[in-house]
Structures are given as C-alpha cells and as structure tokens.
Image (cartoon, rainbow, N blue to C red; front, side, top):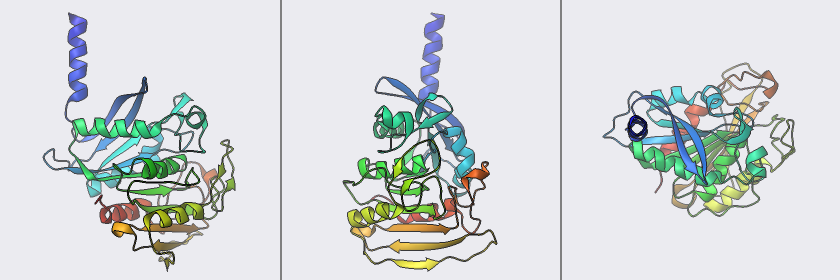
Length: 302
C-alpha cells in the first residue's frame, strides 16, 4: 500500500500544472525514456496561452549546457515565453546528439527518431502548461540548429518558424507541409560547420552542406523572392566582427528567409561569450536572442 501511494503521488506530481521556474520532464518514445528541461517565466499566467521556443543543444553537449550557452532563459523572462531544452541521446549522459540527417553521432548512427521525440515533448508540455500552438518556434546550436531545420521540414504542423545558429540543413532537400520562415545565423569563419560546407574541425566527420544550400532550399520551398535585400548592421563593438543581414521576403503567406552573416565569426552564439575559446570569435554587435525573438513574433503559424 505504501508503494502504491508513493507511485500515485509521483504520477500526480508529473501531471500537475507547471508553475514559474525550472523543471525536468520525462517522456516515453519508442520504448525509451527521454528527458527535457523547461523554463517557465515569472510572468506566466495559466489562463493565458504562452509562446514556446524549443532550444536544441549542439553535438556532444546536453540540455544543461544549452541553458548557459544560449542564455535563452533570461530572454524568456524578459519577453514572456516558455523555453524548452530537449536532451539528445548518447552513450555518455553529458555528451548527446540529435539525428538531424547526416549528423550527428549516436543519434544519426542509430537512426533515433528525434522528430517523434519533439512531438512527444510538445504533447507533454501542453498537458501541463497553456501553450499558444500558433507560436511554437525552434532554434538550436550546431547539431541542434540542424535539428531545427529537420523539424521545419517534418513537423511544420507544430513549428511556426525557426532560427538555426551555426548549423546548416542535414538533408539535401525538404518537403514541408506549409511554409516555415527561417532566420539563420552563421559565422563566415566557422571552422566546425564551415560556411561553404565540407568537413570541419571536431570529431563528427560530417560532410556539411553549405549555408547557401540551406538558404536556397528554403527560399524555393517558401516561394520567396530570389533576389535578396542586404543590410549591413551597425558595427557597435570593436571585436573583429561585422554583421550583414540578407533577407529573402514575399514568400507564401508572408514567409521569409533571413541569413545573418557574422563576418569573422566562429562557431558561436551571437551575443554570448562561449566558455571554450576554441570555438572561435563571437560577436557583440548583435544578440541572436533579441533578433530571433523579434523574428518569431512576426511569424506565428497561419
């Protein structure tokens, strides 16, 4: 009886509505227990649907790393959205990957269905939080950015727009069910996921598609104008970088594809100093978090 009572309490706690703060959740996918972290901002009100940003970590990292690396929990508190940090899979608990197509690691080699995992995460989140289903977005770093691209292609019924950082598409083509707007951030001096494609530094061995391949593919899929508008953004800091914004607009249903090129930038998150200097130069001229959130607000699901 005591064991039954404890199990009942655990099940009740797992299904209780989320409150502001940080939480760890578990879901069952293909017979495996998977986990994700969720940060609910202080301004969350259960009676009001709130936007969600999925933030996927890079290869060889994990959800805890992504919290610090991206700084998105702080942005969530300021702007008012729920941020979710899914964990990939791997043989080592703190070195995980997502199956984004041609990358990366255990997840790709084992053909892990991370699209199904993400759908389960969203279903689970909706059972404990009031989610605005028209405003669910995805971002990610490196392998996580590639995962965001895969979700835009294969889960477009749930994902309104994406903002990949330092990671291209992991497939040669895509066929989403609806247009999905894209804002892609990438350093042109990235040595780990080279801007022009090919194999970079690091153990993945991935032969990456070029950034332009990702942009051209989604410009065509979204029906955007083939001739972009290029804007040089203010060079606010003397940090060895400059930023240009390349916008392909007028897509189906107002879809856009925007490429933010960090000239001189490495395998880094714009506006966040990495712990590992080997990742290269990061820019202080822009904040990826600020730019992607403004972009997301302009592109709810229609």
